Amino acid sequence: MTMTAPASAPDRSPLTPPTAAPARRRRRTTTSRTGWAYASPTAALVLSLFVVPIGIVFFMSGSDWSLLGGNQGTNFPENFTQVLAHRQFWPSVRFTLLYTVIATVLLIGLGLGLALIVQVSSRWSGFLRTAFLLPTALGLASASLLFYALYSPQVGPVSRWLEQLGVTEGVVSILGSPAGALWGTVFLVVWRFAGFYMLLLLVGLQNIPGDVYEAAKLDGAKTWQTFRSITLPLLRPSLALSTIMCVTGSLLAFDQFYILTKGGPDSSTMTVVQLIYNLAFESKRDLGMAAALSVITLLALVAINVFQLRAMRGSSES
Image 1 (cartoon, rainbow, N blue to C red):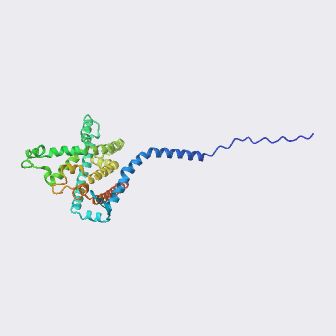
Image 2 (cartoon, rainbow, N blue to C red):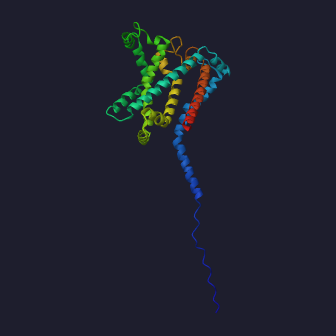
Image 3 (tube, rainbow, N blue to C red):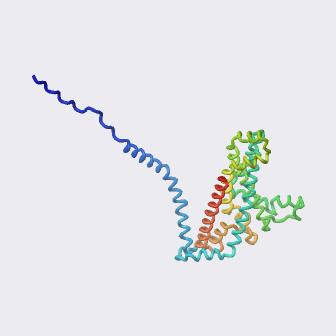
């Protein structure tokens, strides 16, 4: 009898699993949506408080826009030419640059010195760190009002101290002369911000490995050689950050000069930002000219910061 071959069994191989690509795409989509959900509040704040105001300032800089009369139409580039021809523009630029150089050198130098003093843990290091950092807790406007009272020839003690030391003859107004107004304001700024830059540089010093100093000591390196060849090169990122912050803050100085000197005497302490304020709300009441000067200041700040970053990067690579 002829045997028939059994029918072939159906293919029972396991089902082919779905490819991983759709799952990966779903995960990426979920991750992207989660990221946008977290970033959207910050993006909204940046857009509403930074991008939109800058756009408005650029628009106003090309418009005939007075404080009381509103927008009278386009007058680009008259605002820019009028600002550059203003009698206080170049003196304010020169004074702002002078103040920036003085403040930056003093703040970075003193901040580094204070950081080196409190770097080593000792019985007094905690007290000194707190004492140096304490003035930063006071607002700049409050500190300016405090120093305005201290410098006052009527109620302040500083003029009498200078008289007792023989520096001045009689009680004088410290803020009444261009040199006194400049250095009085610089002293305020150094007192207020030196502890802040000390903290920034102290963090950088504490990130330098101790093994490097031990190796240098074993090689017979002197203190100055160690500072010049090890501390400064390894501290360059912190120095770059401190310098950029100090330069930017000094170029935008307003509060301390507005409270202490109002730009005087004889407009000798007029900063660029204070000139913007005067053009907008006091002398000219011209928002278009003030916006044009704001745009010039913004572009100058961007150029200066780019130059600083490239200089710091070049020195670190060399």
